Length: 117
Image 1 (cartoon, rainbow, N blue to C red):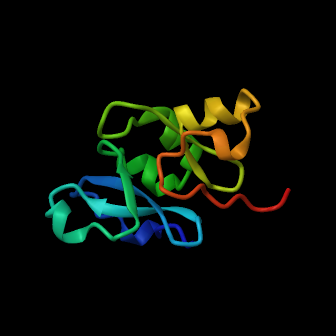
Image 2: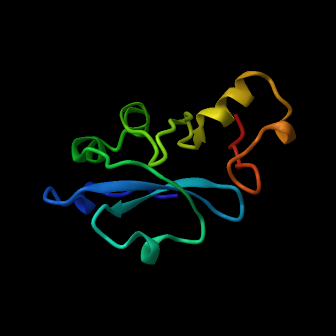
């Protein structure tokens, strides 16, 4: 999925990121103006929402730095793997513990798609 463009960022606006997953399990981010009606804009694939992300981080398009600096709207943390796949801390802990893929408590109905290594 295409990440947002630097030209999408209005310096006078604040933004959050939607953490999404499509029917094929591909996880991606979508930019959301913080002052827009969230309910009217959320795609069916929306899973989680971040707190407001500093515009300097959005312009840098550094997903890892964003995940270190910004929490989810529920206060929990998330991380981003080398392929740009977002994971909740709980999902990452399951993977790091060596849990079977099907035994991990995914935040989505279906597990995410991970690109081949």
